Image 1 (tube, rainbow, N blue to C red):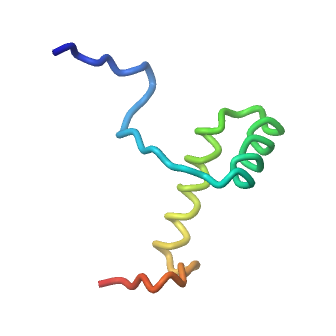
Image 2 (image 1 turned 30 degrees about the vertical axis):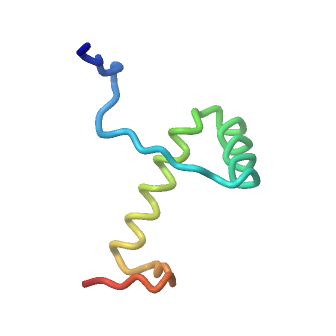
Length: 67
């Protein structure tokens, strides 16, 4: 078994997400306009999403409740 080396500057665990074509196109456009990697745009969006959910500023409306 071979050891996988971590790429410099990366921490955490990888997560694979599938986006509908329209969302992927929008993501590419935003990343290109801001000259950022798509992954950085996704991380920023997730950070904002988690902060808003945690502070009660946003509700999912997906029949998901706190327990």
